[in-house]
Image 1 (cartoon, rainbow, N blue to C red):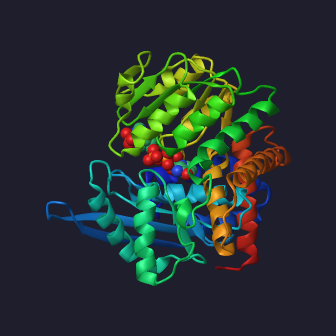
Image 2 (image 1 turned 90 degrees about the vertical axis):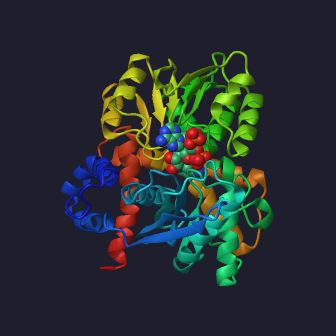
Image 3 (image 1 turned 135 degrees about the vertical axis):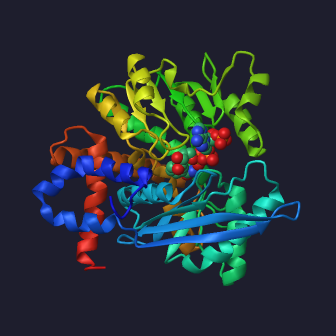
Length: 433
Ligand code: NDP
């Protein structure tokens, strides 16, 4: 607490894990020391990103890369461009990534990064100049054997392209140092879809374990970015009725559920970069838009928070439970705070933490690294089948760890324990580094 004082998000992320690892450490005190080491990032890079806007003004942003843990492989995790990003948020996400990447069984370590730069409202030229300046500092810390960033909030195909182009220019290497690339030049099939699709596979396994299914049930989804839209698409595919989507300004209720065609329309809208969700109401006569509200007051069977951290607090959790929610499956990273998680568990709501349920994105990034090192590209079918199988393994190993350590069916506890043990044992075996 002293070393990370004031870093609310980071301390909350550590608490979330400690709440479930505590009993393990009491029983096996040899794991206390690696945990203390694990919460201190191996390396934190904070740097100035200065660039010139379209009007000739010099703009300064702050860049981050937290290289959290390399016990299982090179650092791996996304870059986020968001005006509210700070070191505490980056550390909380990098910490979460340690457990998530471990659960994929893909030999990848953990990192996270980004900037307080907001690409919304910026021209393509401005985004490109920002990305080039950002990479001009960061490239020296990256490489396919060292650290492999990917996308995250506001970092999609366009930004990855500009970042990779500058990396290649500076290093004179065309290699797999970044994932989420376009499929024409080294990207994996199914990478854009992977987080959302993986989340739905995971949720279906979880539901099946409890004798139910997504089919025929209503879902509320938050967000309308990469994760949310592919979650909605797969949910529709699985026969669930998707009632909502949202963005920073409010949410859309589609009372009879979105169709696949509606989701395609939204993908197109979002692809224009300045497309805002509210514009959907001029496309659909039945949709209702609720400004400055989130969708968690809508009555449904399952909730898929897919926007950002901290979107479900005790208040939203209360509203969901009051409306009879049966399961909450995290697509975003850390969208439910600890109060909300505890409330769900107390009320017997199925709860899947992002570090397990949204691991499909980083898993397919790991598959992209394998394809790059082999100079190969696998078909969509092959990648999706591997994704499905990885999500099943994550569910099974989380459930097994929960049972082995006396947590019954608690997937949150199981994911923390299974993710941690692999990293901690590797840290112990690699010595005091
Ligand atoms: P996108 O940038 O594609 O979409 C983010 C969505 O969340 C947008 O709809 C955005 O609305 C909304 N949003 C962002 N900030 C806020 C906020 N403060 N309040 C309300 N809504 C907000 O990002 P992704 O879909 O890639 O990421 C979403 C979440 O999923 C993040 O937590 C990310 O870390 C996590 N994740 C992403 C993975 C991936 O593969 N992309 C992998 C694993 C996890 P608006 O457009 O108005 O800003």
